[in-house]
Image 1 (cartoon, chains in turn red, yellow):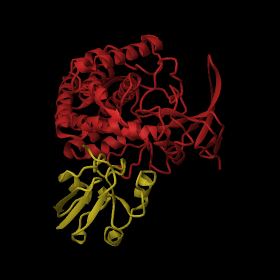
Image 2 (tube, chains in turn yellow, green; image 1 turned 135 degrees about the vertical axis):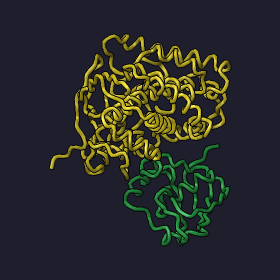
Image 3 (cartoon, chains in turn red, blue; image 1 turned 180 degrees about the vertical axis):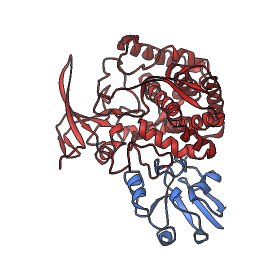
Image 4 (cartoon, chains in turn green, brown; image 1 turned 90 degrees about the vertical axis):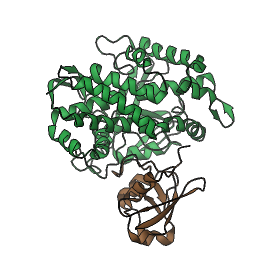
Length: 374
Length: 106
Protein backbone atom coordinates (compact mmCIF):
# COMPACT_ATOMS: atom_id res chain seq x y z
CA UNK A 1 0.00 0.00 0.00
CA UNK A 2 1.34 3.43 -0.92
CA UNK A 3 2.19 5.64 2.03
CA UNK A 4 0.27 8.85 1.49
CA UNK A 5 1.29 10.43 4.76
CA UNK A 6 4.07 12.48 3.13
CA UNK A 7 4.83 13.95 -0.26
CA UNK A 8 8.13 15.53 -1.24
CA UNK A 9 7.92 18.62 -3.42
CA UNK A 10 10.75 20.67 -4.86
CA UNK A 11 10.48 24.39 -4.34
CA UNK A 12 12.81 27.01 -5.68
CA UNK A 13 13.48 30.68 -5.22
CA UNK A 14 16.34 33.03 -6.04
CA UNK A 15 18.48 31.32 -3.41
CA UNK A 16 18.19 27.87 -4.97
CA UNK A 17 16.15 24.71 -4.76
CA UNK A 18 15.07 22.54 -1.86
CA UNK A 19 13.05 19.38 -1.49
CA UNK A 20 10.49 19.84 1.27
CA UNK A 21 8.83 16.79 2.81
CA UNK A 22 5.18 17.73 3.30
CA UNK A 23 3.74 15.79 6.22
CA UNK A 24 0.06 15.22 5.50
CA UNK A 25 -0.87 12.19 7.62
CA UNK A 26 -2.45 12.83 11.00
CA UNK A 27 -0.20 10.53 13.00
CA UNK A 28 2.97 11.53 11.19
CA UNK A 29 2.17 15.22 11.71
CA UNK A 30 1.35 14.86 15.37
CA UNK A 31 4.56 12.95 16.01
CA UNK A 32 6.62 15.56 14.13
CA UNK A 33 5.00 18.46 16.00
CA UNK A 34 5.97 16.90 19.30
CA UNK A 35 9.49 15.84 18.29
CA UNK A 36 11.26 19.18 18.57
CA UNK A 37 14.66 17.51 18.89
CA UNK A 38 14.35 16.15 15.36
CA UNK A 39 12.23 18.92 13.86
CA UNK A 40 13.54 22.22 15.09
CA UNK A 41 11.82 25.60 15.22
CA UNK A 42 15.06 27.38 16.09
CA UNK A 43 15.43 29.40 12.88
CA UNK A 44 14.84 32.90 11.62
CA UNK A 45 11.98 32.94 9.17
CA UNK A 46 12.20 29.29 8.13
CA UNK A 47 9.16 27.97 10.02
CA UNK A 48 7.00 28.89 7.08
CA UNK A 49 7.53 27.15 3.76
CA UNK A 50 8.21 30.39 1.88
CA UNK A 51 11.06 31.76 4.02
CA UNK A 52 10.63 35.11 5.74
CA UNK A 53 14.25 35.64 6.71
CA UNK A 54 14.60 38.57 4.35
CA UNK A 55 11.52 40.34 5.64
CA UNK A 56 12.72 40.84 9.22
CA UNK A 57 16.01 40.80 11.12
CA UNK A 58 14.64 39.41 14.41
CA UNK A 59 13.06 36.11 15.36
CA UNK A 60 9.41 35.57 16.13
CA UNK A 61 9.40 34.70 19.84
CA UNK A 62 8.91 32.15 21.28
CA UNK A 63 7.83 30.51 18.01
CA UNK A 64 11.35 30.38 16.61
CA UNK A 65 12.93 28.76 19.68
CA UNK A 66 13.17 25.14 20.82
CA UNK A 67 12.82 23.87 24.37
CA UNK A 68 14.27 24.44 26.89
CA UNK A 69 14.70 28.14 25.93
CA UNK A 70 11.21 28.06 24.47
CA UNK A 71 9.63 26.62 27.61
CA UNK A 72 10.60 29.45 29.96
CA UNK A 73 9.77 32.13 27.40
CA UNK A 74 6.38 30.65 26.66
CA UNK A 75 5.55 30.30 30.35
CA UNK A 76 6.37 33.98 30.87
CA UNK A 77 4.00 35.28 28.20
CA UNK A 78 1.26 32.67 28.58
CA UNK A 79 -0.64 34.53 31.33
CA UNK A 80 -1.19 37.55 29.08
CA UNK A 81 -2.89 35.34 26.47
CA UNK A 82 -4.83 33.38 29.09
CA UNK A 83 -6.77 36.56 29.89
CA UNK A 84 -9.08 35.22 27.18
CA UNK A 85 -10.40 32.74 29.74
CA UNK A 86 -11.84 35.43 32.03
CA UNK A 87 -15.43 36.65 32.20
CA UNK A 88 -14.49 40.32 31.62
CA UNK A 89 -12.66 39.37 28.48
CA UNK A 90 -15.62 37.32 27.21
CA UNK A 91 -17.93 40.28 27.86
CA UNK A 92 -15.71 42.60 25.83
CA UNK A 93 -15.62 40.12 22.94
CA UNK A 94 -19.41 39.64 23.13
CA UNK A 95 -19.94 43.39 22.73
CA UNK A 96 -17.56 43.60 19.76
CA UNK A 97 -19.19 40.59 18.12
CA UNK A 98 -22.67 42.00 18.66
CA UNK A 99 -21.73 45.27 16.97
CA UNK A 100 -20.24 43.41 14.01
CA UNK A 101 -23.26 41.09 13.67
CA UNK A 102 -25.56 44.15 13.59
CA UNK A 103 -23.86 45.13 10.35
CA UNK A 104 -23.89 41.63 8.97
CA UNK A 105 -27.66 41.19 9.38
CA UNK A 106 -28.63 44.71 8.34
CA UNK A 107 -30.15 43.39 5.10
CA UNK A 108 -27.63 45.05 2.80
CA UNK A 109 -25.23 42.84 0.83
CA UNK A 110 -22.02 42.35 2.80
CA UNK A 111 -18.73 41.28 1.30
CA UNK A 112 -17.79 39.10 4.22
CA UNK A 113 -14.00 39.31 4.39
CA UNK A 114 -13.50 43.08 4.12
CA UNK A 115 -16.94 43.95 5.52
CA UNK A 116 -17.23 41.64 8.52
CA UNK A 117 -14.28 39.34 9.21
CA UNK A 118 -11.44 41.85 8.86
CA UNK A 119 -12.95 44.59 11.04
CA UNK A 120 -14.20 42.14 13.69
CA UNK A 121 -10.86 40.34 13.77
CA UNK A 122 -9.16 43.69 14.35
CA UNK A 123 -11.52 44.80 17.09
CA UNK A 124 -11.22 41.49 18.85
CA UNK A 125 -7.46 41.70 18.55
CA UNK A 126 -7.52 45.00 20.42
CA UNK A 127 -9.05 43.06 23.31
CA UNK A 128 -6.39 40.37 23.08
CA UNK A 129 -3.54 42.85 22.87
CA UNK A 130 -5.02 45.31 25.39
CA UNK A 131 -5.14 48.23 22.96
CA UNK A 132 -7.79 50.90 22.42
CA UNK A 133 -10.43 49.77 19.96
CA UNK A 134 -9.58 52.64 17.60
CA UNK A 135 -6.21 51.01 16.95
CA UNK A 136 -8.01 48.40 14.85
CA UNK A 137 -8.42 51.04 12.16
CA UNK A 138 -4.64 51.16 11.76
CA UNK A 139 -4.47 47.40 11.38
CA UNK A 140 -7.41 47.35 8.98
CA UNK A 141 -5.48 49.76 6.82
CA UNK A 142 -2.96 47.00 6.16
CA UNK A 143 -5.68 45.23 4.17
CA UNK A 144 -6.54 41.58 3.81
CA UNK A 145 -3.96 38.88 3.41
CA UNK A 146 -1.09 40.81 4.96
CA UNK A 147 1.19 37.82 5.21
CA UNK A 148 0.10 35.57 2.40
CA UNK A 149 0.76 35.50 -1.32
CA UNK A 150 0.16 38.69 -3.25
CA UNK A 151 -3.22 39.08 -4.80
CA UNK A 152 -4.35 41.68 -7.32
CA UNK A 153 -4.40 45.07 -5.64
CA UNK A 154 -2.15 44.04 -2.74
CA UNK A 155 1.01 46.03 -2.13
CA UNK A 156 4.28 44.11 -2.72
CA UNK A 157 5.21 41.56 -0.05
CA UNK A 158 8.18 43.54 1.24
CA UNK A 159 6.07 46.70 1.70
CA UNK A 160 3.49 44.74 3.67
CA UNK A 161 6.20 43.08 5.76
CA UNK A 162 7.89 46.43 6.43
CA UNK A 163 4.62 47.99 7.60
CA UNK A 164 4.30 45.36 10.34
CA UNK A 165 7.97 45.50 11.37
CA UNK A 166 7.83 49.30 11.56
CA UNK A 167 4.64 49.13 13.60
CA UNK A 168 5.90 46.63 16.18
CA UNK A 169 9.16 48.60 16.49
CA UNK A 170 7.27 51.82 17.12
CA UNK A 171 4.93 50.24 19.65
CA UNK A 172 7.75 48.44 21.43
CA UNK A 173 9.66 51.71 21.78
CA UNK A 174 6.59 53.54 23.10
CA UNK A 175 5.31 50.67 25.29
CA UNK A 176 4.94 52.88 28.36
CA UNK A 177 2.38 54.98 26.45
CA UNK A 178 0.11 51.94 26.11
CA UNK A 179 -0.53 50.75 29.66
CA UNK A 180 -2.13 47.32 29.92
CA UNK A 181 -1.17 46.40 26.37
CA UNK A 182 0.93 43.46 25.22
CA UNK A 183 3.71 45.93 24.40
CA UNK A 184 3.61 47.24 27.96
CA UNK A 185 3.47 43.74 29.45
CA UNK A 186 6.48 42.69 27.39
CA UNK A 187 8.49 45.59 28.81
CA UNK A 188 7.90 44.20 32.32
CA UNK A 189 8.05 40.45 31.76
CA UNK A 190 11.20 38.62 32.79
CA UNK A 191 12.41 35.27 31.51
CA UNK A 192 14.71 33.40 33.86
CA UNK A 193 15.31 36.59 35.81
CA UNK A 194 16.18 38.93 32.94
CA UNK A 195 14.07 41.40 31.00
CA UNK A 196 13.32 40.75 27.34
CA UNK A 197 15.50 42.37 24.71
CA UNK A 198 14.00 44.78 22.20
CA UNK A 199 14.20 42.10 19.49
CA UNK A 200 12.43 39.62 21.74
CA UNK A 201 9.65 42.09 22.50
CA UNK A 202 9.26 42.90 18.82
CA UNK A 203 9.32 39.19 18.03
CA UNK A 204 6.41 38.38 20.35
CA UNK A 205 4.38 41.25 18.96
CA UNK A 206 5.18 40.23 15.40
CA UNK A 207 3.99 36.64 15.81
CA UNK A 208 0.88 37.88 17.60
CA UNK A 209 -0.16 39.73 14.45
CA UNK A 210 1.20 37.15 12.03
CA UNK A 211 -0.53 34.28 13.77
CA UNK A 212 -3.72 36.00 14.80
CA UNK A 213 -4.84 37.85 11.74
CA UNK A 214 -5.40 35.88 8.53
CA UNK A 215 -6.26 32.80 10.61
CA UNK A 216 -9.07 34.51 12.50
CA UNK A 217 -10.36 36.10 9.30
CA UNK A 218 -10.62 32.60 7.78
CA UNK A 219 -12.49 31.27 10.81
CA UNK A 220 -14.99 34.15 10.93
CA UNK A 221 -15.62 33.96 7.18
CA UNK A 222 -16.14 30.20 7.45
CA UNK A 223 -18.77 30.64 10.16
CA UNK A 224 -20.79 33.02 8.01
CA UNK A 225 -20.40 30.67 5.06
CA UNK A 226 -21.60 27.70 7.08
CA UNK A 227 -24.78 29.49 8.07
CA UNK A 228 -25.36 30.75 4.54
CA UNK A 229 -24.90 27.27 3.07
CA UNK A 230 -26.72 25.34 5.77
CA UNK A 231 -29.63 27.09 7.52
CA UNK A 232 -30.20 23.92 9.56
CA UNK A 233 -26.81 24.48 11.21
CA UNK A 234 -27.90 27.94 12.32
CA UNK A 235 -31.23 26.59 13.58
CA UNK A 236 -29.39 23.91 15.55
CA UNK A 237 -27.13 26.43 17.31
CA UNK A 238 -30.08 28.72 17.94
CA UNK A 239 -31.99 25.90 19.57
CA UNK A 240 -28.99 24.78 21.60
CA UNK A 241 -26.36 27.51 22.07
CA UNK A 242 -24.15 25.04 23.96
CA UNK A 243 -23.60 23.37 20.59
CA UNK A 244 -21.41 26.34 19.64
CA UNK A 245 -18.52 24.86 21.59
CA UNK A 246 -18.22 21.61 19.64
CA UNK A 247 -19.27 23.45 16.46
CA UNK A 248 -16.29 25.77 16.89
CA UNK A 249 -13.98 22.78 17.12
CA UNK A 250 -15.52 21.27 14.00
CA UNK A 251 -15.15 24.51 12.05
CA UNK A 252 -11.55 24.79 13.20
CA UNK A 253 -10.99 21.26 11.89
CA UNK A 254 -12.71 21.79 8.55
CA UNK A 255 -11.35 25.27 7.88
CA UNK A 256 -7.91 24.69 9.42
CA UNK A 257 -7.25 28.44 9.52
CA UNK A 258 -3.51 27.85 9.46
CA UNK A 259 -2.88 25.07 6.99
CA UNK A 260 0.86 25.01 6.57
CA UNK A 261 3.99 25.71 8.60
CA UNK A 262 7.50 24.25 8.43
CA UNK A 263 10.27 22.84 10.59
CA UNK A 264 13.95 22.23 9.94
CA UNK A 265 15.59 18.87 10.54
CA UNK A 266 19.16 19.75 11.57
CA UNK A 267 20.48 16.22 12.08
CA UNK A 268 18.20 14.16 9.84
CA UNK A 269 15.31 11.96 10.86
CA UNK A 270 12.12 10.42 9.57
CA UNK A 271 8.69 11.88 8.92
CA UNK A 272 6.07 9.17 8.59
CA UNK A 273 7.89 6.57 6.46
CA UNK A 274 10.00 9.16 4.67
CA UNK A 275 13.66 9.76 5.55
CA UNK A 276 14.54 13.42 6.06
CA UNK A 277 18.12 14.48 5.36
CA UNK A 278 20.19 16.68 7.67
CA UNK A 279 19.26 20.29 6.98
CA UNK A 280 16.10 19.37 5.05
CA UNK A 281 12.79 20.99 5.93
CA UNK A 282 9.37 19.47 6.43
CA UNK A 283 6.01 21.10 5.73
CA UNK A 284 3.34 20.71 8.41
CA UNK A 285 0.06 20.12 6.58
CA UNK A 286 -2.54 20.80 9.27
CA UNK A 287 -5.38 21.09 6.76
CA UNK A 288 -4.73 17.66 5.29
CA UNK A 289 -4.18 15.93 8.62
CA UNK A 290 -7.49 17.33 9.81
CA UNK A 291 -9.24 15.38 7.03
CA UNK A 292 -7.59 12.03 7.80
CA UNK A 293 -10.30 9.37 7.24
CA UNK A 294 -8.70 7.00 9.76
CA UNK A 295 -9.20 9.61 12.50
CA UNK A 296 -12.29 11.55 11.42
CA UNK A 297 -15.32 9.63 10.22
CA UNK A 298 -16.61 11.21 6.98
CA UNK A 299 -13.84 13.83 7.21
CA UNK A 300 -15.28 16.16 4.57
CA UNK A 301 -18.65 16.33 6.31
CA UNK A 302 -19.36 19.06 8.85
CA UNK A 303 -20.80 17.57 12.03
CA UNK A 304 -21.34 20.26 14.62
CA UNK A 305 -21.44 17.73 17.44
CA UNK A 306 -18.43 15.71 16.31
CA UNK A 307 -16.76 13.88 19.17
CA UNK A 308 -14.00 12.92 19.49
CA UNK A 309 -12.52 15.69 17.41
CA UNK A 310 -8.77 15.60 17.98
CA UNK A 311 -8.01 18.15 15.26
CA UNK A 312 -4.63 19.78 14.91
CA UNK A 313 -5.90 23.23 13.93
CA UNK A 314 -3.90 24.79 16.78
CA UNK A 315 -1.02 22.39 16.33
CA UNK A 316 0.19 20.12 19.10
CA UNK A 317 3.12 20.08 21.46
CA UNK A 318 5.26 22.95 22.72
CA UNK A 319 4.31 25.37 19.95
CA UNK A 320 0.54 24.85 20.09
CA UNK A 321 -1.20 28.15 19.28
CA UNK A 322 -0.81 30.75 22.01
CA UNK A 323 -3.98 32.51 20.88
CA UNK A 324 -6.21 29.44 20.94
CA UNK A 325 -8.38 30.55 23.86
CA UNK A 326 -9.05 33.87 22.12
CA UNK A 327 -9.85 32.18 18.81
CA UNK A 328 -12.14 29.62 20.41
CA UNK A 329 -14.00 32.27 22.37
CA UNK A 330 -14.43 34.42 19.28
CA UNK A 331 -15.62 31.44 17.23
CA UNK A 332 -18.33 30.34 19.63
CA UNK A 333 -19.40 33.91 20.36
CA UNK A 334 -19.91 34.62 16.65
CA UNK A 335 -21.71 31.32 16.11
CA UNK A 336 -24.22 32.03 18.89
CA UNK A 337 -24.59 35.76 18.16
CA UNK A 338 -25.53 35.28 14.49
CA UNK A 339 -27.85 32.38 15.30
CA UNK A 340 -29.59 34.38 18.04
CA UNK A 341 -30.66 37.04 15.52
CA UNK A 342 -32.77 34.46 13.73
CA UNK A 343 -32.16 35.97 10.31
CA UNK A 344 -31.58 33.80 7.27
CA UNK A 345 -28.25 34.46 5.60
CA UNK A 346 -28.13 33.89 1.86
CA UNK A 347 -25.19 33.73 -0.48
CA UNK A 348 -25.15 36.51 -3.08
CA UNK A 349 -21.82 35.54 -4.56
CA UNK A 350 -19.26 32.91 -3.59
CA UNK A 351 -15.88 32.28 -5.17
CA UNK A 352 -14.24 29.33 -3.38
CA UNK A 353 -10.54 29.42 -2.75
CA UNK A 354 -8.83 27.11 -5.25
CA UNK A 355 -7.00 24.07 -3.91
CA UNK A 356 -3.43 24.57 -5.04
CA UNK A 357 -0.90 23.50 -2.41
CA UNK A 358 -0.05 20.16 -0.79
CA UNK A 359 -1.79 21.22 2.42
CA UNK A 360 -4.88 22.81 0.86
CA UNK A 361 -8.32 21.40 1.41
CA UNK A 362 -11.68 22.68 0.25
CA UNK A 363 -14.64 23.70 2.31
CA UNK A 364 -15.69 27.04 3.80
CA UNK A 365 -12.69 28.86 2.28
CA UNK A 366 -13.29 31.68 -0.17
CA UNK A 367 -11.58 34.15 -2.43
CA UNK A 368 -14.71 36.24 -2.26
CA UNK A 369 -17.98 35.78 -0.40
CA UNK A 370 -20.96 38.13 -0.47
CA UNK A 371 -24.01 37.45 1.68
CA UNK A 372 -27.27 39.14 2.59
CA UNK A 373 -29.54 38.64 5.59
CA UNK A 374 -33.28 38.01 5.15
CA UNK B 1 -24.09 13.56 44.97
CA UNK B 2 -20.29 13.40 44.94
CA UNK B 3 -17.83 15.63 46.77
CA UNK B 4 -14.64 15.89 44.71
CA UNK B 5 -11.36 17.66 45.49
CA UNK B 6 -8.90 19.08 43.01
CA UNK B 7 -5.25 19.58 43.92
CA UNK B 8 -3.84 22.42 41.80
CA UNK B 9 -0.20 22.54 40.68
CA UNK B 10 0.85 24.64 43.67
CA UNK B 11 -0.86 22.29 46.11
CA UNK B 12 -4.00 24.36 46.66
CA UNK B 13 -7.05 22.16 47.18
CA UNK B 14 -10.45 23.16 45.84
CA UNK B 15 -13.52 21.16 46.64
CA UNK B 16 -16.98 21.00 45.15
CA UNK B 17 -20.10 18.88 44.92
CA UNK B 18 -22.09 17.80 41.92
CA UNK B 19 -25.03 15.55 41.18
CA UNK B 20 -24.34 15.02 37.51
CA UNK B 21 -22.40 16.27 34.53
CA UNK B 22 -18.69 15.83 34.01
CA UNK B 23 -15.86 16.32 36.46
CA UNK B 24 -14.52 19.05 34.15
CA UNK B 25 -17.80 20.96 34.44
CA UNK B 26 -17.56 20.80 38.23
CA UNK B 27 -13.96 22.04 38.09
CA UNK B 28 -14.98 25.01 35.93
CA UNK B 29 -17.90 25.80 38.21
CA UNK B 30 -15.66 26.08 41.27
CA UNK B 31 -12.79 27.80 39.43
CA UNK B 32 -10.08 25.17 39.57
CA UNK B 33 -6.91 26.73 38.21
CA UNK B 34 -5.43 24.76 35.32
CA UNK B 35 -8.73 23.27 34.15
CA UNK B 36 -9.74 25.26 31.09
CA UNK B 37 -12.16 22.87 29.40
CA UNK B 38 -11.73 24.84 26.20
CA UNK B 39 -13.50 22.47 23.83
CA UNK B 40 -16.38 21.62 26.15
CA UNK B 41 -15.80 17.86 26.02
CA UNK B 42 -15.18 17.28 22.30
CA UNK B 43 -11.77 15.74 23.05
CA UNK B 44 -10.09 18.47 21.03
CA UNK B 45 -7.98 20.41 23.48
CA UNK B 46 -6.49 18.43 26.37
CA UNK B 47 -6.94 21.37 28.77
CA UNK B 48 -8.68 19.38 31.51
CA UNK B 49 -5.95 16.82 32.15
CA UNK B 50 -5.94 15.23 35.63
CA UNK B 51 -4.24 12.34 37.37
CA UNK B 52 -6.51 9.91 39.18
CA UNK B 53 -5.08 8.23 42.31
CA UNK B 54 -4.24 4.64 41.29
CA UNK B 55 -6.62 3.19 43.89
CA UNK B 56 -9.51 5.17 42.38
CA UNK B 57 -8.99 4.21 38.74
CA UNK B 58 -11.37 1.28 39.18
CA UNK B 59 -14.16 3.74 39.95
CA UNK B 60 -13.35 6.44 37.38
CA UNK B 61 -12.34 3.90 34.75
CA UNK B 62 -9.11 4.21 32.78
CA UNK B 63 -8.58 6.62 29.87
CA UNK B 64 -10.20 5.50 26.65
CA UNK B 65 -8.35 5.25 23.37
CA UNK B 66 -9.51 8.72 22.32
CA UNK B 67 -8.21 10.25 25.55
CA UNK B 68 -4.86 8.51 25.25
CA UNK B 69 -4.51 9.75 21.67
CA UNK B 70 -5.16 13.31 22.91
CA UNK B 71 -2.85 13.14 25.90
CA UNK B 72 0.04 10.88 24.92
CA UNK B 73 2.39 13.74 24.02
CA UNK B 74 1.23 16.10 26.76
CA UNK B 75 3.54 16.94 29.64
CA UNK B 76 2.64 14.82 32.65
CA UNK B 77 0.93 12.03 30.70
CA UNK B 78 0.92 8.90 32.85
CA UNK B 79 -0.88 5.62 33.45
CA UNK B 80 -3.70 7.26 35.43
CA UNK B 81 -4.11 10.33 33.21
CA UNK B 82 -7.68 11.22 32.30
CA UNK B 83 -9.46 14.03 30.53
CA UNK B 84 -11.78 15.21 33.28
CA UNK B 85 -14.43 16.04 30.67
CA UNK B 86 -14.71 12.30 30.05
CA UNK B 87 -15.30 11.38 33.69
CA UNK B 88 -18.99 11.43 34.56
CA UNK B 89 -19.89 12.46 38.09
CA UNK B 90 -21.47 9.54 39.94
CA UNK B 91 -22.00 8.90 43.68
CA UNK B 92 -19.11 6.42 43.41
CA UNK B 93 -16.68 9.31 43.10
CA UNK B 94 -17.57 10.83 46.47
CA UNK B 95 -14.30 11.55 48.30
CA UNK B 96 -12.06 11.51 45.20
CA UNK B 97 -9.05 13.88 45.05
CA UNK B 98 -7.69 14.57 41.57
CA UNK B 99 -4.33 16.11 40.70
CA UNK B 100 -4.56 18.85 38.10
CA UNK B 101 -1.80 18.38 35.54
CA UNK B 102 -2.09 21.54 33.45
CA UNK B 103 -0.81 24.93 34.62
CA UNK B 104 -3.10 27.55 36.07
CA UNK B 105 -4.20 31.06 35.27
CA UNK B 106 -2.44 33.35 37.75
